[in-house]
Image (tube, rainbow over the protein chains, first blue to last red):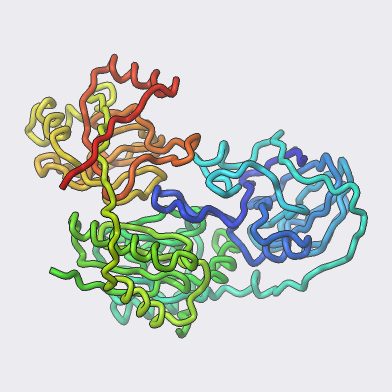
Length: 283
Length: 243
């Protein structure tokens, strides 16, 4: 069991999300940055689908009520065990009653805690990803307890670690493909879309990231159609919205770009006022 | 007339198939038929489908390597004359209480549309609404068939809280809010029926292609149904649709 001592502002349990329920309007959900969680789960020899903690703001504290191994990946929020700094992207041995805490934000926007064999919270529609109205709660709260496997008897301990590509956190170009309504843009608008360094507004969450700069247009709404995580919508006001993992399954704004999976991961590690640049990928 | 379909890549692992930009039952039936054929032919590669008014989006499990090859195989499936058992559609009878305690915009609508409240209710309950697809929120049905006389603009300032079960009209559409949410549609009533019940194995009873019929109920009947749902005694009445 892990006890949540301080849940922080937005901490959730996430796995690779819900697939197959779009027909009843259920979002895909799942970890925002699969690049980082794949690293953490691999280091622990977990399945890549295993559930992890996703922490969007620091100031969290967790107490382990059983022994286990963990791996922290993604953003660096200065993780500590019982007050001693620990490394990212490395297997860390946890003893019963150890306390994991996070402090200063050094880089990135989302950090992940993977636990040996994965978090064992309830599966709802084949996923543990928290989502309002689907799971009991949409975020973790102080005092919550999360079931994990006890690894007391497995003392063998290898020092596996993976070198992480720093560019994942540093670069601001987002690789993308033309969206279904890209062709509706004028040459001038296309150029603006692909040359502007857009800044992230305050309005960024698991459903979508709104950008500050305006792309003037008089495009009409489309007949409501599918949207996906990574779809870039252009609103009548000219504001762009990049949809993220918890987005709805349909929408009515023109879909001008579609981010690649790695661009969604990269964007997940950006925060307010960070700049991004859309880079059209050659097919 | 045969619909001309267009196939577009939608990112690296989804294909968007579009029909004519129209909202029609014929297009929906064609979309659902195509979806059934694809499901029958090559289910293993596909993660999910997203049905909308004039489009079918196929989300694959992995990035496709060759878009053109993928499209060609879909085109072949579309042309296949597969004998499929015609999918049965149901008409779901949905109780709605149009009392002004729920229909808080009825009086204003009555003035704007120059209709008596009773006429609004009569027009709203007379139609058999087609369920095109489910989106926006888990369990939110996109319904077609609202009577022209009931078309009304959304509220200039959306409400921050619209109660779960609210039956509403926005523009040319009508719908039911399956959960409490913010919303800008005009509220005309409330349905005690749960459109998204996560405690059930199939959380949403309705399917694309089914129909909805609203039946007016009194406030006391409404409360009785709420009670019956809590005690798991309530069954939504449905009939088979014959075309």
